[in-house]
Image 1 (cartoon, helix red, strand yellow):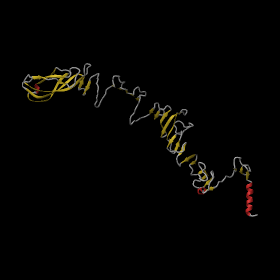
Image 2 (cartoon, one colour):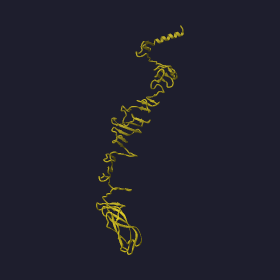
Image 3 (tube, helix red, strand yellow):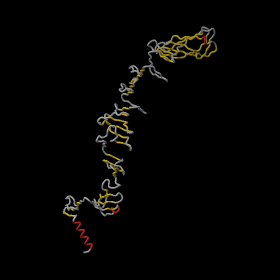
Image 4 (cartoon, helix red, strand yellow):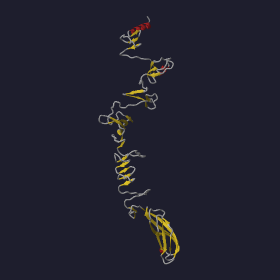
Length: 393
């Protein structure tokens, strides 16, 4: 018997002690147990594993017409178990398992898992960001995040001191709304009713700011605005003034006035009034140098005007003027006052000899009687006199 034949017989005897073939499948074990009815090949061992063919990527790609589901172990270019997910004519080799090799997409590191090859989509095949979720995201479903904590929040940055967390009370860990954190401190709180607090975790109003606030543009209040007043009664209500369709400073405005001030007032510029100015006392101007008042209910006004004439008369001679208009009409006959001569030209006489007397005045004009009360002839070609009419409005 040749040596080769002897080796073959010994090998067959050894296999027969561990290999049993059955019509329903093949079992390989050390106890001669039959294969599981559902398996064509049932391998059992407590000491050894199973080796599938090992090859590099070039050898794998050289397999002719690999069957769908054919498995090999690739030894290079991202080593791991691969199977043909395509057809024999068009192979599509895919790695088996989510972490089968150092170059796979999902990599475990300690108790963590990470992915750094591209975007991740949950519920979408076309993620547009590092993480795209085509549905809702639930944070802290077990309600484990405690009071004033970012332990189970949506955080930003490696130190996790900036984030968004649920607003909770320190009594019973009750969810009340939403908190925004910076520097690991709650800065903005939104409670369960929708009130927003800045600098306070218990907002009492739709916007409750604890501290100073600045508006660089328009501040619009559709109903009422209180400054120093918690419950304003007017569109603009401060601790010292009340603003409605009327304005009161230091007092509630009287219904007859648009502006009602209690106390002294000072205007350091021009003030224009398009209507009447009503005073219940004297109106003082120029630091008490001028006072305009009426001792009756009638308001008085002052209208300046001028009278220009010529005169050529001897001693005692003169004339009566035509009607000289004031420029405005009074409600009654005003008092006419003749003031200084502002201009005069002539050939003879003394201006001091002129006597100018207003008379026959009415609500819109007055007459003057001009007389030479001197001792010689008075001959003036032009005389302009400043006058005042003071009378009822």
